[in-house]
Length: 189
Image (cartoon, rainbow, N blue to C red; front, side, top):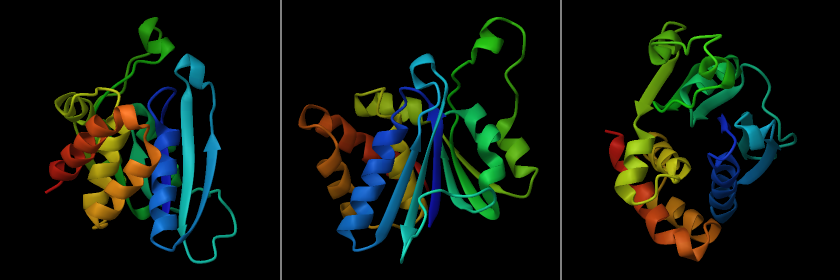
């Protein structure tokens, strides 16, 4: 399973990849992670490659090989869509973080991003991860909401993923993150 996690600095893409790694190791799967930080301190693009399976040699996913893209920000889904295989799925947070050219009025934020993705023949599953994180009591837990939705989407055992979150998240944030995991899981029908 090749999973590309994309977002902007501060959204928790790195923690999400570590949770997936903890889940893989706990379930006796080989896992390789590769983190690309970009300009994360300035809200720049951040990507994490997660490869889970048997005998994974390289941690890097090449273009057209991702089975899943977890897009923590809408524009990042478009930016990285070329990594998704034709039969892949993008799990998309419908939240938007405006890049500097949009803030300055030089460019417009693209509209109808899920429709653009679906127009390529790929599947896009959209959730309101920011709203769900707020309901869980921690608006910064978008990453864990997305992992909850991914867990349901991929039919991963919920208790296994909950254990991986518990092993990866600092104790003082654990309760709200476990609620965020449940909110994301319940958002997928």
